[in-house]
Image (cartoon, rainbow, N blue to C red; front, side, top):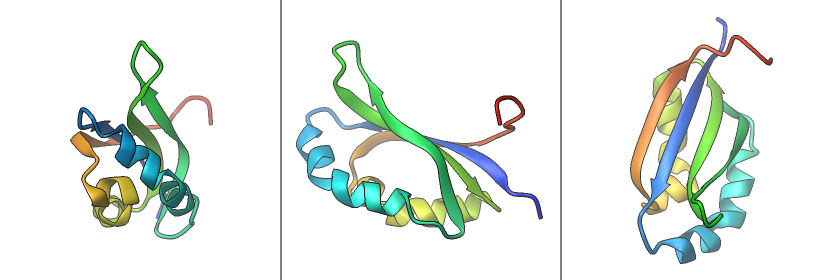
Amino acid sequence: MEKKYFIFRGIDYAGSKWMREQLLPEHRIYVRKSGAVKMVHGGPLYDEAEEAIGSCLILEADSSADVGKWLSAEPFFHAGLFAITSVDCWGWTYGR
């Protein structure tokens, strides 16, 4: 079965910079692990003042169910950092 790609986008709750900073080391360890879901690319989203306001991750997995399970244990997601989240299946056709 060919792997699929998913884009996760999470926008932080206002005033949660302290939570992002506190969880960042644990988040970095988690997203670098290989398993049913692999993070291919990822990083913070910034506002115009260059303050982190969220996260964008490109994930490789067999299914959206695998992505959902992986996200439920991801430190930022699990702690409730995000006010808004989305996960979309992505057809990566250019730049691979």
